[in-house]
Length: 61
Image: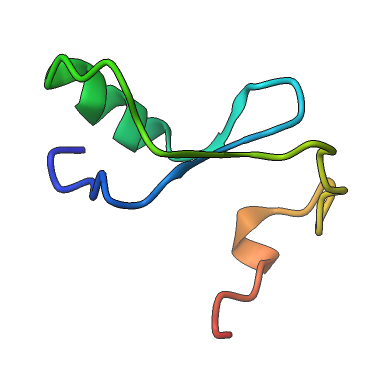
């Protein structure tokens, strides 16, 4: 978490929940920052995968 790069935004779904970047939120909180870069989706995108084991996901791309 200490290596999290706060220059990258967190990603929020349409309801405002963190989709990606919780490690950056935690680091910013530890540093007592009151603001963080964020991208807030107006409409939450459909997931690419549902009920797939993480071992079956392809990370080569």
